[in-house]
Amino acid sequence: MKIRFAVIAITLVLFAGVAKGDASKAAVCVACHGTDGNSVNPIWPTLAGQGAEYTVQQLNAFKTKKRNNAIMWPFASNLTEEDMWDLAIYYSKQKISISPSETATSEDAMKLYRGGDQERLIPACTACHGPNGAGNGPAKYPSLRGQHAAYTELQLRAYREGSRKHPMMQAIAQKLSDEDIKVLSSYISALH
Image (cartoon, rainbow, N blue to C red; front, top):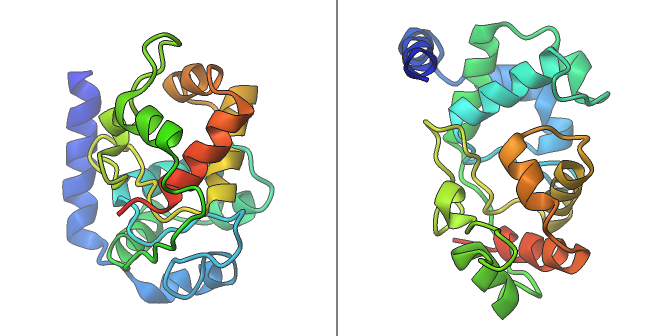
C-alpha cells in the first residue's frame, strides 16, 4: 500500500510540473461533455470540478479497457499520460453546474447518503465522497455532486450488475434496491 501511494505521489509531482490543464486538448470532449465540462446529456458524465487524479485513473481504465466503453475507448486509446493530466487538470478547474432535483430532499436518500444503513451493512456515502459530494481527489474517490441523476443511476446499476468493477462499490450497490438507487442518484445530483 505504501508503494502504491509513493508511485501516485511521484506521478503527481512529475505531471503536475508538466501538465497545465490544456483547454485545446479538450476540444474533442466538448460534443459529449460540454464546452466547460458540464454535460447536457443526462447519461454522459459531467467532468467539471472532478478530481484530476480520478479523471486520469478513469482515462487509463478506458485506454486499457479495464473500463469497457465503446465510445470512450477510441478517444482514450490515443492519449498520452501528459494528455490525460492536461485534460484532468483542465476539467478539475471548471465550475460545476448543479441543478435542483425533484427528489433532492428525499429523507430516505439523505439518511442513506449521510448515515448509511446498518441493518443492510451499507456504509454512508459521505465516508468516501464527502458531505457535499465533492469526493476525495488524492484517494481517487470521485466528486458526485452535479452529476446527472440518470448517469449516477446507470453507474450504480453497472456496479450492482458487475459490468463496472470496483470491489467496494460493487458490494454496496448489490445491497441497494432499485428505489434506493433512484432516490440516491437524484439526491446526489443536487448536493452543494
